[in-house]
Image (cartoon, rainbow, N blue to C red; front, side):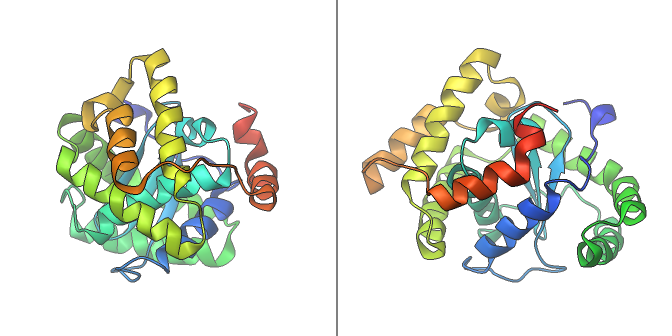
Length: 230
């Protein structure tokens, strides 16, 4: 995902992702960060998600489409929250920039629909997101950090009332989808989804997974335009 192509998606679906993320962050071992947690959708078909220092979490459109339930999307978001929780920070965002950006985010979050504020947020973060993505594409987190975040995410999902099997199901789905695209950027920055699923299965078992019907309906209603490829 070249830096020149980095862009945010419109507010549709952002409120849902932010609500989901905030509901998970409450159960994190690090529920509060400088400026709080914030969750944004990136306009990219690449299957990926990023956690930036301080609690900014970015999920691509491709990752959302890879998910088939709220439970699986919750697993993705929980994994990224746990990178923040474990302080796997990359130091890619300049402190001054992120401070100003958090001010804009706070105002945008209060309105949930402020197009002018979202535009200001986009302008402010364009370079910062580029820094994060560029660093992730060239280095990413270590295999140990990824597996630590996976294990912590399973515990977080349990505390938040989501099935732990959603994490394994999500990794298995990612493995199939990434095989079709040869991994793209994800393969450069993460251990294989298959190896991560196998590692979790050895530690937590695999009791199967069925999406919760009520959460499934909420997920589909909130993200229908993205899921339909619009």
